[in-house]
Image (cartoon, rainbow, N blue to C red; front, side, top):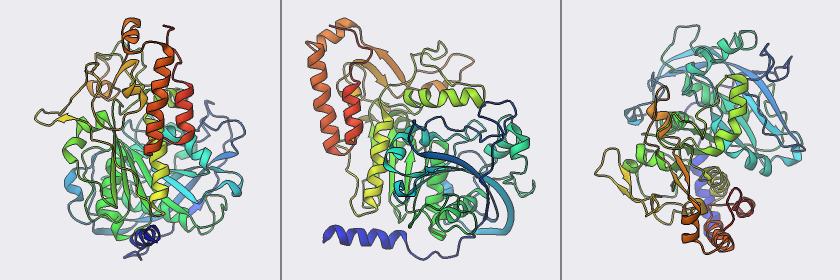
Length: 478
């Protein structure tokens, strides 16, 4: 009974009638591709995925969305919004500005596989092109559980940036896209309404349905990572309350923007060690029935898993791989191996349960941080691994030093790019033997810690099994 009442209360909070109706834009497509991904003609979806396993039954399609957006007072002309942008509710400055964007849709082909939930990702444009960071983190989970995923790019950098903004990358395919109302609005102030209208086109399609007619009601969960989560935090705080369309928010790698206490939708933050030291340690607040934050010890903002899965696509379409783990241009060896993406799977799982009335679990303890330093410094154990937080076996049963913060970069790699990639330094055989009497003793301890994380809700059963099965990969015998 209590759970049912809580579910009803959350439903009332997320389904309140909007103050003003969101415009429903016109959807065109799917837009056909005339060449295969990687062809020099570039008439295919930018960063077309390679992460559909054989037999997954998933399809990728691209659509164009045309609408007329309102311009809000919360402009945030820079890529990253200032915290002050969230202080007051957004107001409409002007209306009826034309735009055209693309939607990238990845969904089950079989309607029976669709679970009714749609992950709507605000594409990351830190590099002046659209990157689907959370898709790379959680595509395996989305496919396994029958989610639809939609990528939305409402920002100028992703559409108009050079040399790899969509219009410049393929004038033939994307030359008509525009989020500046024909060059008359250049402060990104249309992005908020564009993101709302994209949600409306998904939730209540008129004409072309970008989800291909998947049946039943659709629950929209907004997500983004890093620069995108900054925008989403401002959107949740100041814009979304005007016209609620998203049921919940999952913010990966949040930076600098606190979530207001009066946000009515559930918000789950996934905080790497770098995120915590960069800003989140100073923004901590207690968990509530609408807000939960998870800090993952030893994890980096830009981690090894995401490098491995997105590097081939980035190299194919943009010509860059990102910082390689063996780079000589970071002061410390780069790319923490702490499996942040598996905790991300659990975060989406718990967000779905949250919308049914069951709040995600709280961390056992926050990461230990010295806030007297600027930036704050993590308190570490004898191996250099951060204390506290959600502790996967990668941190609690270490075979390497994994940290979320690298000392910095060596030209031409900027300090910031290296720092957020974290550090990975394998222990030598002497250290392994000192920590674990045998390989079997190490594996037993991994099983114990992984099972503890599964019971705590920070790992899903399938992911816990895989973590145990791969625990000894690459390790020497001893």
